[in-house]
Image (cartoon, rainbow, N blue to C red; front, top):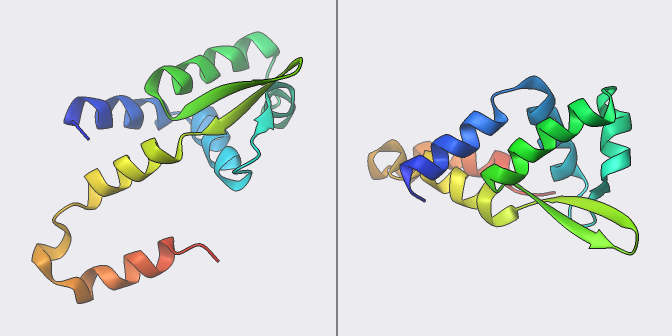
Amino acid sequence: METDTALAILTALAHPTRLATFRLLVQHEPGGLSTGQLVEASGLSQSTFSTHLAVLVKAGVVVPEKRGRRQIQRVSIDALRGLMIFLAKDCCGGRADLCEPLLAELTCC
């Protein structure tokens, strides 16, 4: 991942509503959530939430998917993986023992 891409993602996530939306979508992978469900969870108006959603989509961390008449939002696992690798690359000067607790926390249960 290039630095500019990482910065775009971090900027998109640097807002409480967008970060909460992203984390909620991570919890609902692989099915995603409808835009209506996300609006309801946010407590914001449709237009205000749509602005935040557009920022996440533009940064590439959320991917809209049309299912019938519903718009489903999903996290881009590739973008998440790329950002995590970018942030932790060359972690701990090659000392795997220092990175093991981080990796253990990231392991899906």
